[in-house]
Length: 288
Image (cartoon, rainbow, N blue to C red; front, side, top):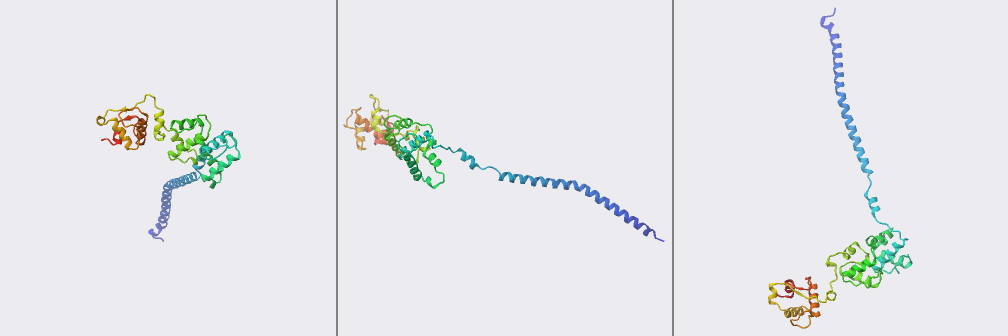
């Protein structure tokens, strides 16, 4: 006969197994949804990172788009050949007559230009050479435009005939040398900007030209100044002579060409206003 404790032991053991299994099953059910959400978020995050990496790798570069912006020229077109001949001639080369015909002399001049500018070291040299020569800068300009602006800046281009001749090239070279540009490298943006600038810095001041182009009744103005009360015209002429500018007879008469010319040259050399004896001019001459 079993004892009571021994009778109930199997029942208690079975119940404990069932209860523990139910408890563990409930915990697993509660925990599983959170576990799925976390794994889903991690999967989405990993997928997003992969997409970003792929997008970065396939992004287009700017090299191709920039290359499309560079102008290209068809050297077989007469107007392109004509502009090339004009710019080669202005740059000091000998392309032959500017007639829009691609002759051997033009080809030789272009080849020489490539050597001077060291463009022969690259593979495709034609388009870089044409751009460097200045075709984009010349654009719609005419020879008459160049002649007029050179004349306005006191560089004599000869007749305003819209023909690129020796006088026009000489005046252009004088302009470039005067202001530090290397014309042999082509018609650069800097040269064009200086040519068409209204800044007096890029003007060839010539006292003789200024005097000859002045109105017949032009006179030298005496501005009001305390310093002028003790200065005579005779002493001004003497001061000009001391500084190396011959004013002609040393007297108190005004209006003579040598005196005006000497005064203009002195004022040009010292960056002073022209045609006016003001206090700055007098102080530059040495009056105190």
